[in-house]
Length: 543
Image 1 (cartoon, rainbow, N blue to C red):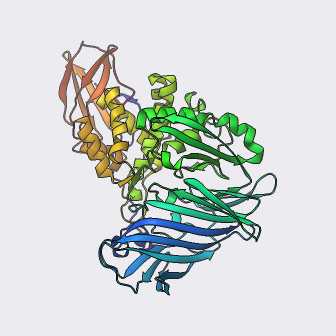
Image 2 (image 1 turned 45 degrees about the horizontal axis):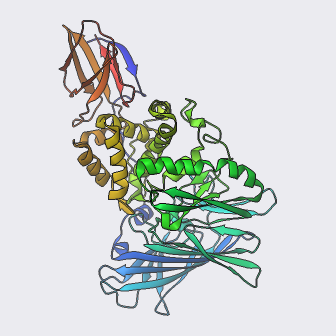
Image 3 (image 1 turned 120 degrees about the vertical axis):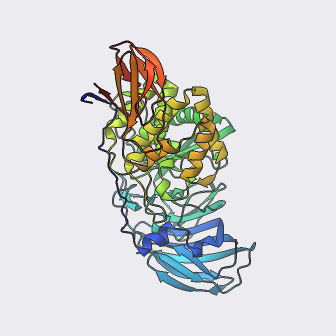
């Protein structure tokens, strides 16, 4: 057949196989896999106790790791990245041998490790940590000054890992049940970290130590420090689980702007509790903290650097106008409290679980306040940013994330999935159910896929294979002959199957093409046919 007209609702990519990078090192494996030296023990608690010196740009201190022995083992892996140095490990009052292997450090234990026992080990470390070059994407510590010349310091470490600034079990599959974060800083500054402030100690050397306690499980990269000349204000939010404490920490000169801009927070909470269920960390409160970079989803301590403007630093990422109706960083980074901090990937190859759902949360925020059409316009408007350069899922066990398409393409995948459900009440129940089913858990893509398939009531293997594991956009091909509409899917994996809504002479019609030509509907001899724009597909009319 001659292909006469082509209509694309997305970028059409020629069908080809993309190979993932396989040039990985031993350090990648030590960082990204559940090694034998990690597998035998389960994290229960951290106490990170550090001194941060902005003048010298150094961090020194200890991390006491509490763990439960799952099975006997005598070698324990701790991660800490150069140029920081792990100088000592102590258990039961005895210094232990440390075998250094790049950023992985293997501690030779002396005491018997009996299954079921709860143990602790005290790690001493220090030095000049890696400076964040382009935070939060290229993480580390950001050392800056505010307009008054006072230190303005913050951590950010997604991807690169928490071990870039503190020693820990730096793999996402295991989280401590709770954590104490004690940070010593110059007395004229304030440190803000995760959870609730337990106490502030004023010391004789003109410093203060801030003790923050996290009562919920927390992922490694979600732990943060924020140090500056902060002023504080707050409010109460009446939410689904009762009264939620909201605290704001901003630079002194920005207080007036913050009081106005941060009115977005209760609006965000109202929308997201509607769609996703209760905010997952009532016990630890919600904080929004000004940072010297764009922002990050640190659990119960969301960081903000969006210049007190709506959009993404004043830009509408959808180019529809709707993106300027809200502060992108407040909405997006807070959305991660549900998808990243409540539901956390086990392996960074599954990072789409964080970013696709959170990108989609922007659309749902717009819909909640401005209507379903506005929400659809927003998410569809972001399609022009999709690159289809490589699959959304990365390479497992080597700390390798997939394409940045996990944001815009991921949001559109979920928007497409909603169309298949074709029941908004049910779709909302599915989203809320995700946060209930996997509450405070680390998960895999397979778990999320299985849950969605079960709740939607149809197999989704081909759907997810297509959208997550290839770069191909499904193409709906169709033609009319003798009053019949023929259609098929092309540019798809072999097991792809998806019903799709089309408009035939402006009337809605659902069809279920396969990968082979088949009759899908009776039509007039020359109908106007348009696939519904809410599906992330391409289309091609053939003659």
